[in-house]
Image (cartoon, rainbow, N blue to C red; front, side, top):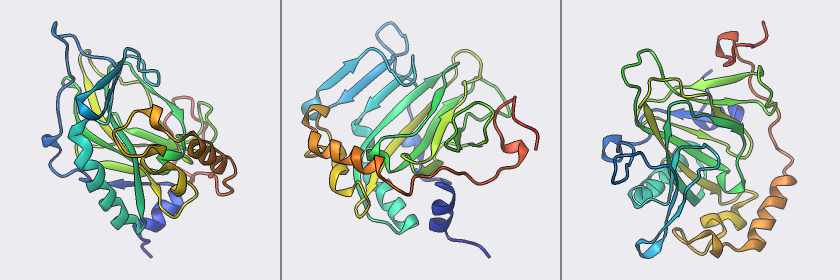
Length: 256
């Protein structure tokens, strides 16, 4: 008996969505460069009144470029909210969003996210693998155990495809970007919380008065309350559906 998308999401903690972004070419862009043609790295935070706050180091993925609140994605944040609400039959508050340009050799460490990422989606907007064939730099999802060799599943994505996932509960990561020099990939991350969930009262707009405001405007009492709710959540996932051997990502995986 076929189960619903919501049932799959509740069971697995993630859900693949084909063509989540309609006509992604409208949002696609190659990696930004400086006046000397060098690719930009670090973090750009787009604030109100056309202000950009810049940090030279991208701490989560060193050497990448992350852009928070880029105006190109503001409409998409709400379009995708409606899409997820229809798929999962859930009411959401938007929290924040950003995009990231990844380059050769980079990896995203295995991790979970903070409360403002309760219901998240990552969408592929484009890539250039410099001629490498039969390759896709997908996202892995896996169990709570973060040791190498434990089970995980790689989800390949083409431009426009997305993966909805429980960011606070399901580990997710990307292994080293193994492609020829000059290759790159762009992802956009759109984050939400369940209006009626444990974080709904605290994480709307990422605990700020509105989207687009700097982190200094966060209500720290709401942040504290969200973190306490996260720590006390009884339904924290500590399992992951059993996977076939070929779905286990690591070379040193155990024989089944």
